[in-house]
Image (cartoon, rainbow, N blue to C red; front, side, top):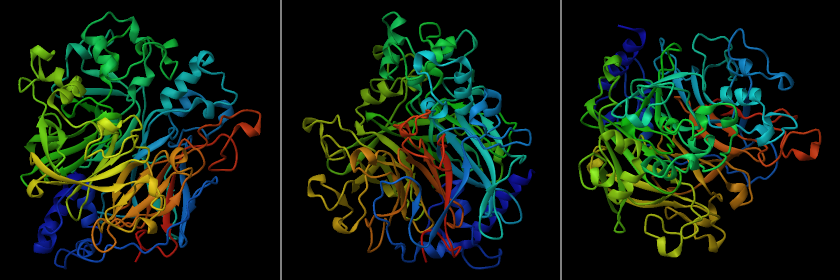
Amino acid sequence: MSTFEQVIKNRFNRRTLLGQAAKAIPVASFAAAMRSTAAETDVAGTASASVRDAGSDPRLSFTAIPAASRDGFTVATGYRSDVILRWGDPLFNDSPQFDPATMTAAAQAKQFGYNCDWMDFFPLPGHDVANPRHGLLVVNHEYTNPELMFKNYGGFNNQTREQTDIELMAHGLSVVELMRDSSGRWRYVQGSQYNRRITMRTMFEITGPAAGSPWLRTTTDAEGKLVEGTLNNCAGGISPWGTALSGEENFHQYFSNASALPDGPLKTLHARYGLPNGNGEYPWSRHYSRFDVGKEPNEPNRFGWIVEFDPYDPASRPKKRTALGRIRHEGATIEVARNGRIVAYMGDDERFQHVYKYVSKGTFNAFNRAANSSLLDEGTLYTAKFNDDGSGQWLPLVYGQGPLTTANGFTSQADVLINTRTAARLLGATQMDRPEDIDTNPVNGKVYIALTNNTNRTDRQVDKANPRASNRYGHIIELTEDGGDHTALQFRWEIFLLCGDGKTASHGAFFAGFDPAQVSAIANPDNLAFDNKGNLWISTDGQPGTLRINDGIYAVPTEGPERGFVRQLCSVAIGAEAASLVMNTDDTALFVAVQHPGEGGKWTDTASDSISSFPDGKQPVRPSVVVVSKASGSPVIGS
């Protein structure tokens, strides 16, 4: 038995000793299970601190910061912030130091990538199963800003092949070992045996029902089972067996020339996913034919999947799990249902797209890690219909059932999964206001859905689940599965937050019934996370354009007397998005992804062209991971 398998076995053995107290908390993901053991006594002791916390007062103790619009990273009184990872930081012993004047693709392949987004904390196995001081941080690198990366950037038509290659290597993911020293400061470990870069040059295996489909075959992969790279990795998740899940989101923008295809099913499919008829957002097709749809018509179909890989094994091959559908994936939050099946909640991040969940055919084995390797390859994908009376149904996307037949262009389950959007629309799934991250509460077991905005919704398109026309500010839905069973096909739902400024009546803000005049103004919820007490933490994306304030991190109780009391803990730099957040296992560290600082400006010889100098007070700006902690070393959520 491997060391990791022994850790999992030991952890679950200890959980069985928690008795009836532990049964009050749903056994959710690997991360939640780790957290539930973070403060355990020995196996003969009492229930863990987090079990006790679940029944205690969930109110937060920090004082909200005022909304900010200045450059830099601002935190609430009593907290400190430290930048621990920057774009270009060397990860390996042979990595060159970051030098923006002499960047190369080979150097970037050994350095921390660009535009950090979703992160998760993977405790390193050892004598303390849920060690909160030592672990791996897995980080998505969603996209690149060439105008901020390259000084005096020449623009789309003048981008060099070397600049394109640097961008290819700056995408993907990083795995980085982190440690907290005796002073409470965090640092990353250069040269760690675990450190890894996954880039657009990394080879992925395609698995599940769509593997080998004719829609996935290209001139370089006649079998449709291997693909080079991963694109636009946005949110993600962590599996109960300790693997990382990453969602490929806006993959369409890297491709060009869809108009070159003849009219037919493939051209219609590409249009459904927004592939451009002319130039895409990136000029990569000028250097690589795989990004020219006219030359490689199936290449876009190889993106838009959930990626799974083992962060503990840098030599392992990542996989694209097609059973979870092809959409603009925001992430995959995993639960272990009561019957042992794996459930993954996912959003399709575009206006009028849908909410999904996947239920595995097999069951989770807590004592044999390898036995879980195919759980994300065999199962049923569902999409959500939200009824105006507060009820809802999960509709199965299964070939041959309902409208998913040859008459509507589907000849196999592979077709359904490759064209998930059309399948969901035919089933009558509710069209939502940009469903982004979806997360589950480790205390009350409910599901929370971030809906970022939809300014295209008209008065005639309003429904109870998307109640505002021209929804600039976004909202969050709280979903309760029937009987608390994550495999249930029925659910109830309610609006938890209608975002905006509660002091401005025209915003129509609602905060779970809490006095809107007392809460922090918030808009455009993006990524979600929970602490051990069940408080919801929210990162935002878009507030400079809606509330005229910087994006930031917010917390809100989901239960108790302060349910709905939103308050802001920190604010990020000008032009930046607070792209993601995650806590370590004992909530004493909050990691925040500061993505695209300075976006809206550019790096030139003229200082006035830049709008931010984060994080080092100079150019170029560098997307970074910041850790927030309390000077006392106590949990970030407060006493």
